[in-house]
Length: 131
Image 1 (cartoon, rainbow, N blue to C red):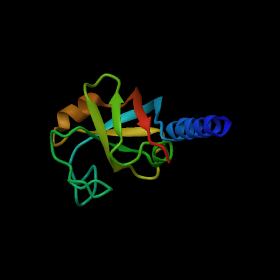
Image 2 (image 1 turned 45 degrees about the horizontal axis):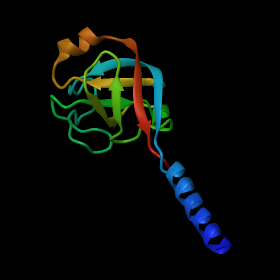
Image 3 (image 1 turned 180 degrees about the vertical axis):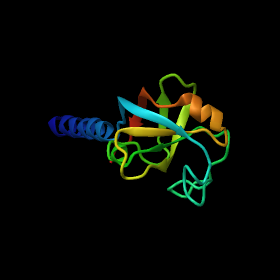
């Protein structure tokens, strides 16, 4: 009977530990934000191509992130909620290495919307994936 009890305890411990290792963590942080469009002058010679190879199409909800934020869990295809905007945005692009603690919100071809957004501090929330 004791060995059966020990076996049950070991199995329960394995389930508890494996469940803890697989949990995602909700991260909330303040970052600087700007907006960009698919213009060669704002991106590269391939203005509809994200840094991970994704095609950027007007109307999709995506962002570019500074590379320091990638190390904090904002990796490719991470879903992000942005204060002041509806819905979820996907990380589809990386910013130039000179930027830190910053996101760039994709506005398709709408230069006026990007100008109107300007530069502002926002709170973002996302689930950090387990390593």
